[in-house]
Amino acid sequence: MHPLNWAIVVAYLLYVVIDGLRAAKGTKEIEGYFLANRSLPWWAVGLSVMATQLSAVTMIGTTGQGATDGMRFVQFYFGLPIAMVILGVTIVPFLHGAKVFTAYEFLERRFDAKTRSLTSFLFLVSRGMSCGTIIAAPAVVFSAIFGWPLPWCVALIGVPTVIYTMIGGVQAVTWADVKQMFLISGSLIAIIIVLLVKLPVSPDNALRIAGSVGRMTPFDFSFNLSETYTFWSGILGGTFLMLSYFGTDQSQVQRYLTARSIPEARSSLLMSAYWKIPLQALILLIGVLVFVFYLFQAPPLLWNPAHDRSVRETRPAAYAQLESRYGDAIARRTDAALRLSDTPRSDASAALAAEGFRESEARVTAIRDEALVAAGEVTGESARDVNYIMPRFVLDHLPLGLAGFFIAAVLAAAMSSIAAELNSLSTATVIDFYRRWVRPEASDTHYLNVSKAATGVWGIFACVVATYAATLGSLIEVVNRFGSFFYGSILGVFILAMIRRATARGAFVGLLSGMACVGAVSFGLPQISFLWHNLIGAAVVVLVGLALGGNPGESSPART
Image (cartoon, rainbow, N blue to C red; front, side):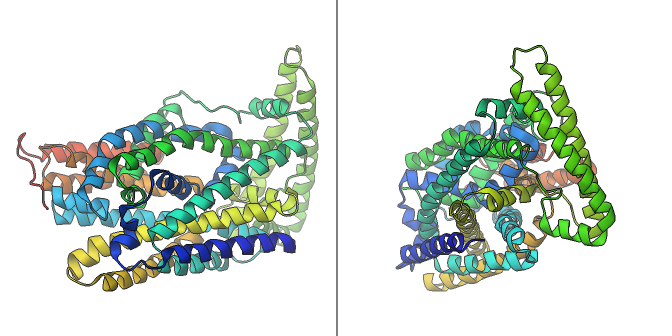
């Protein structure tokens, strides 16, 4: 990479770290460290919520998803506005008004200590794994750039971020998030401009070509439990996922607990309700345009450089033959794409041109599939390389300086998201376990020291997960697959907390039942998409909890 790009990356990362440490000065009490003394304005909290989601996973995994699968992934977010409205009138007033540090403290007041501890434990496991996936995203970029082993790249990203998070608090994280949003948005807009300038066809024809192979289809109204991205999975399963993520996941709850008041906490969530779907559609559109761009530029047979080297060295003759066939198929696909672009929509031969392009795209995909199978056999790893598409485009085709700008955005976004995740993991560990069960009485200085140690432990755990997560396919899917295993059951407990007849026994047994049912579905019925796990988990917890909840009016007493 050019020295100018490196200078941009280093300068911005230094600025983020120094500014974050400056903002953390004077934080000596746990309420300031964990909740910024509940003093942040709604717009800063709202941008922090969005920045936590718009991590490097989004910039790499979602754009790659758009390039390979088109706009269908946007259906995943259709339940978000519904969830935000529901949360604004239910869980947000409950948690913000209770003046708790974690969402799970509220469960002890409503039910009992074991329900609180089990729910918090499930959060810690799910969020620790998801944090590892967030670290994996920029590690993929570094691996693609330098050819370094993935574990070294993980350490390069994870270690400095853990150190930064140990020193800073949620206030430093929040204001860093605000800056990240402007950098991320600017880099995405710049990439769209570059793509539109470099494409040899008009924007209208680019979208027409992409649409001919289904890349521009945002809706799928089929009701199929095995299909991950449909309108119904987004509206039903997605709503339950968003309710659980934003309403019960400490990494998000901690954001709006820092707001000054309940109305400001609601406003911070509604910001995501208004802007998340358009922003996600924009990111997917970048992936679609990258797909069109590589119709007119020779793409690599394997996007992962390490896999490309391994197959080339292990099977040179077979791989050379595969590359020769791939080159011919790419040339035919380019001709077919130009033919489709030059054919007016109203022309009688337009349908024939579209069919010719689809056939040429199918041939390219078939040859790519052969190469992926060979890569999997040679390396013994998952050969899905969707996470490498955007890094390769950035490094090979972005103008000087802009590549550094984009990589700085990816790394800074990753650091910001990782810091937020680790801070919430540390908060739950200290408040829900250490202070609750080990050391109920101690000074704030002692708790702060313990929280910093917990941050280090969770950082190591996340780095270990990251080395595995990068090989699982689309990173944005991996994050939500991890979360969906736990989220629905956790949400079910909070729903029970708002039902008067629910009891502590019903909540605890319901939570165990929900997790057991989701586990059975995940491993016994893999054809059911992970998005439906959220609905299944929540429904089982509520039904079992109410069945064991006694007669109406026999509610579990609230604890203070």
